[in-house]
Image 1 (cartoon, helix red, strand yellow):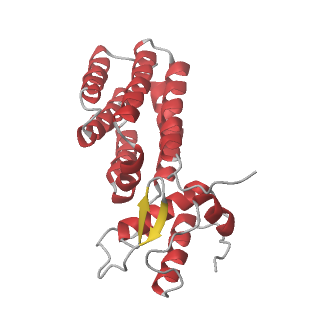
Image 2 (cartoon, helix red, strand yellow):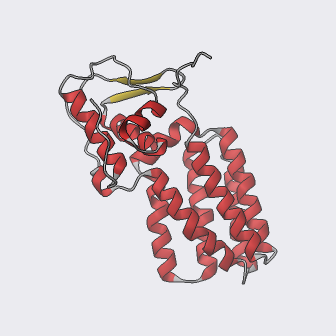
Length: 237
């Protein structure tokens, strides 16, 4: 029923295959999909790729993710929401990986020439994040502004434009849907602490520490979004 895929925008191909099976009636409404681990094995892809595919299908209304239970086929939507084609959208994990690579280098550069004005801006965004750990929209806005402020400290307009394209994708429907399952006051508090480490390294003028703090933060963000939906089958010994 499932076919191993060739490497090309894999999460989209996984979503396409599952959607075809749903529309053909091979996967019936109310039926439960195999666990992420099993789907990854059947398709021959990584679990994050499966995760991204499932998020696409849920945004489109084809499936329902029930934390702690599993992923179920939903009633076929009368109309699919008008959202930018997933063929044109990078998956959340791909975005986070790109940010990790690029923003680590930017933090390193920012730490070479920290300015009082730049550090004050970081402190302002940190205060906003800390005050908004239970208000997702405000926390996200402060989070993105914090990262943008680091780029501004480097003073390169081309880098600012490039990073703005990446961080703006944090508010895409797919990213927001994924985040809705794994973000909460406790994860935002962790993020605040990770941001403080980045701020302190930049303020101290320590490029290597700043690079590592940013790399650690965005790596941990990927890990948070990789937590299980809680649908793993119980295996008997």
